[in-house]
Image 1 (cartoon, rainbow, N blue to C red):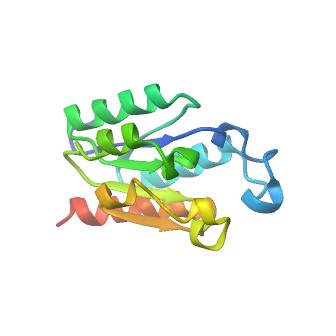
Image 2: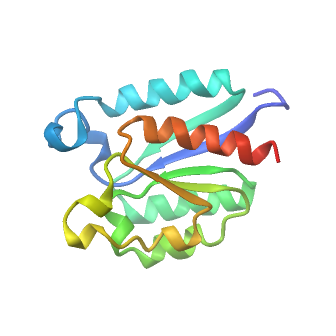
Image 3: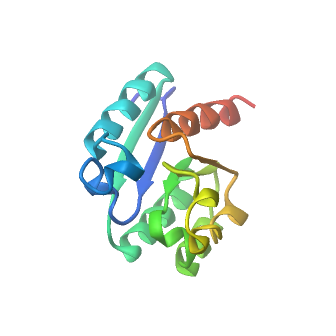
Length: 149
């Protein structure tokens, strides 16, 4: 990675590795690998080194947020189901030392009532939701804009 490239972690929580087969009527037909590829292409355009990761483990996701805080890395975070109840994830996100954009493929406010509350939103720089896979791309552009300030 050259010195002038911003490294960005794109972190994904549980079940997102199953995109494309998991409820395509809700989440669309794009696979997780498609999202990884789209982030990589836009990352190149924006001169970012984009590292996309996915885990079903809350502990692993917390560890990645600690890594981001320690290295002062911007984060795009789709916490998935952890959005609504993981105070451990919220506490890790609150230690951020660079922008953190929460993303969602769907708009949680238009879904089941239990999805309306985000424990992450209060410690995120911002939230982008409801634009499908484009939510990730909008978040990368937001990080670029914040880095240029």
